[in-house]
Length: 182
Image (cartoon, rainbow, N blue to C red):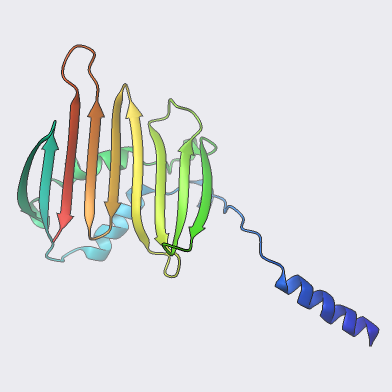
């Protein structure tokens, strides 16, 4: 009987203990794949009649237009995202990875930061709904030879590409291209 009471006490004590949050290892020996995520998005939303409001701001001057999903230059839109992909095995151990949950925004956040400043992709931040695990946004920072890119994608809301390039002899370049889903 004493053993039974001791067992119940220990069981209830251990079950009330707060679970430790562990950083999950990268799946299948790789990091998150932007390319695979884009494929999944195209598969999920293929055939839907989306249109976009495209807003281009170059060095402070803004222009806008409208485009259909069928007549967009998707290779130009996706190229900066695809070039930032860190899912190749050669990138293992090249990034610090952390995960945290934000109860205020009800999101799980997955954050990759380059250990070496020479890596093209410097930061990758993925936000996912903490109840459904659906990705709510992806933010990426890249840099090469003084050209900085900031990429943002919120599914069915916004695709944003920002480029900053400083020139020693010429004008600096400040470009922002935004595609708003309609």
